[in-house]
Length: 630
Image 1 (tube, helix red, strand yellow):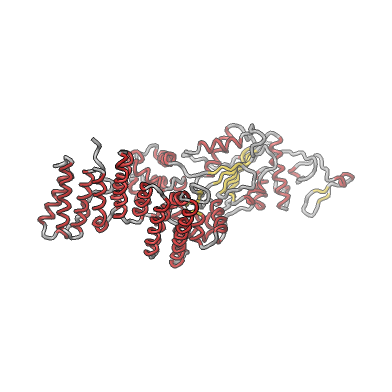
Image 2: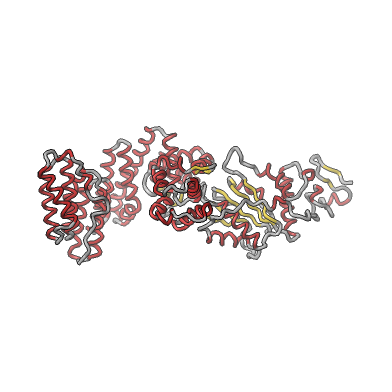
């Protein structure tokens, strides 16, 4: 007869007891969990819980490379240096569970895990439903066939028994695959990891878990082709065939872009389109185009992008959450650690650590270089919502002011270093941060700081002249900043000078590039007031390039703007110049020529030309193009 301790566990008696708990012939299902020699009798039929994988969706696509990498870890024939745990990490809604379940099914089909698959959803990011490993071990042991009366009461004893049972399955030729889904972090998952190498584990989490000695597999959003394929498959599953993606290819591409190529968002859009089989993609696109309502649209039948992001956000520390909320105030495509620190009003090292924690939680992504960060498009929309909900207006304005101050200080420091060490550092900085400077200028205007915006752009242009030696580089960056600041007259003048500088080189390619910039900047001119101020230098730039037809079209738009502003006499002069250009280019009688003559006739004969909406007749963006070279 064996005595039991206070927890009901067997205590060996007799002469062997002093030698260190030697037990022979015990079985786990009789609560023997410790000893040097333990024989385990497994149930003759695998418990049904080991066949409880969730269904694998029929629209799995775009993950072939990641699936192969995951299967390499699961392969029992892998060499001894291969980790036994693979951690699939990525942001909410990226498809981690779908990939893990697909890999588990493929592994079972290949006969790698005859013992079955133990699937556990840890609910790590839902405070109401989160399952702690200590509480879970009892039900896991039952799933593995251990009767309740034989399960120890202490968590640490249950954990040892759990690992021993997994090892016993493997020892008797029935290794298991353990799939731990949605872990909150390394410590959430660690107690559930097996001790033997024959039992493999797939672990999914939004958090990078670097302390588990696992193979890390980072999952990112889909590329455009795979996103379109996923959307198409979702519609095919419902209807067998759906023509909408083929009928509206442009809308389809824009639709997946607005979904950020995120599988969860694509699945929601697919479900919404399934609900309304006659709904054109253009209408769905209109629904998503309003950024303020986009996350409201991306919700259906218990699936919601906002809710998925919110679970990750709620798991942040208070300071990390506060930083996350202000990041959208740095409106460029990426933000540096230094700029983020300025926004947040904290020192650089502390901010870097917070950004790294946001990156581990997949709420920010690494940018194009170390120390640069970016927000996924839909995460940015969510962050803007949090900003508007939780950050008062005066705090937002103060944050933008700190960011402007950071850039102004940086300009001053770079000019000092140019004198000491040369211009390479300043030029590299402008290439990396130029877009952010423009975006910050626009933010300053929106925050009611127009003087800050103007000073920022003036200092940027001043730095350009110091940072670049060649006139072509200086003029390119002048255009870049003036265009970004909507100072179109100065932007067109920089382009005109650029064309004059490169003319001696007789380079068709260089000239074509500059002309395309002229036309792209013309497309940016959106009001008649802007046109009156800026289209004359645009026409002058095109004249330098010999682009007669494009010059004529720009002059027509200038004439329409002048009419809109009530300056009919000047408009008539400009329209006659446009007709001269069309005639010079051999395009008399062309649609452009007829349009100009019609507008000129009305301008000369109308008694109240300003009552007409002349500006609406301008060329639509993208319609002023160059003529083919003869």
